[in-house]
Image (cartoon, rainbow over all chains, first blue to last red; front, top):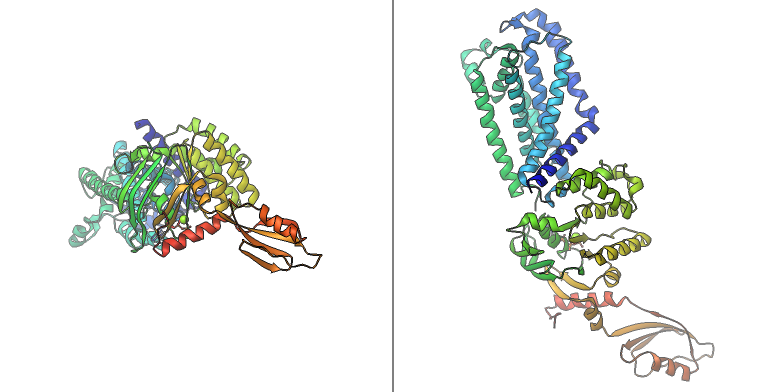
Length: 256
Length: 311
Ligand SMILES: Nc1ncnc2c1ncn2[C@@H]1O[C@H](COP(=O)(O)OP(=O)(O)OP(=O)(O)O)[C@@H](O)[C@H]1O
Ligand SMILES: [Mg+2]
């Protein structure tokens, strides 16, 4: 029986990966282009005038944050758009009529989002190598932060898609929540540049912990301690997965 | 054990619509069962509850003896569902759709691929296996959903209006196919608006209207309830006479077309005898209405008047 569930889980992964590979022009190319622009404009052109940040060249400083930014948006949008269109076209019913447990559905969609996020992470990292020599301070820290961030935002995308009633509803959160939080999450600056008050406020932003955990893995510097970063990531993961599980188990938005 | 047992099933949607008002139904294993009813009667809702796409409000459902409350996984594994609306991903290829569906039921991929070939071939879709589903015609899409529903080799196949929008030739080949798999032991439950279809295929039948079962019986018993048949006779009136019949309800539509109601046990001979005596020849004859159609309307009317259609 356990084996049956693994077959189902693998099937959803294959389906999800096939989906984003089939529409690679929409899913893989845009982040590569956007990030190249960021590297050219902020890293090379403006960065040279900024000088050092946190003891590193500006380019080196922003690369981890930019990789993280693409991981976040891609994990999120892959799951939110895939799950929402499955709901919208009713093909989520294919899974609902079959004996697929709720955790397999969640694991399947989240796994698909993580796969796309990791692939994008690798692509963006490769692009960044054209601009800087990336150093790696702590490889395991990079991998752990990357995976926990990807699962967190994939689960968040799922929750968003469960509630969404129109395609607009799934673009609201990225526009009004994710993008501002990411820009204010220390991708482009060190929190130490901010006045004390805003430093405290910034620490309420979960993305700060991801960007900094990730930056610690590459550069060995961080505005917050690495264990705090991991703690925050795990806590948010637990919360989002619990919400997603409850919603899907009750059939919110998918069963009448 | 029954293939399907429904007891006191009620469903009220969030909108407040009470789609099912307490349905009782049993379907024998190996049966070919029709669920008939007008638009909005509650057929798809019933099927939705059985296949766990719709949460019931009240009542019990057992699928091959497995309760959908306590043993949902086992219940789901027994059912193959062909829904009323197309619900596959239009961008996936036929092969992907059926192989993935098997995967959701835990069928390993290499076996799923063999079955995909088997069922896509049986439903004459193998040539199209690598095309995206959106490029199929309506009839092909229906057949794709049948192939998809068979991929985990279920004991019970439930089809919600499988032949809607399908031309007569393909409809007939679907009938042949369904009869064949029923003979192989799969229980089939289908909903349809085509009474001819139910008459052709099904052994047992339930008629549902406004969320209530108004009739649940064998096809044979249902048909024998209607013992009057109406025939339309085309007459040769070259001798200038007007046909007259005694002892039969009849209507002359024009001077050479006669409609006559005949009780089954009375037979047609007396009609012919009377006409022959008048020197009138019968050139041709046809059955006027679909009897089932007529019965259907009658049952629904008596149900709505509060009459007891089961009596
Ligand atoms: N998701 C839903 N939300 C609210 N009401 C619904 C929903 N689905 C169906 N209904 C209502 O429930 C009733 C029964 O609908 P159902 O789809 O079961 O009928 P049906 O017998 O399948 O009809 P048809 O032959 O047209 O397919 C109708 O009044 C319908 O409007
Ligand atoms: Mg229906």
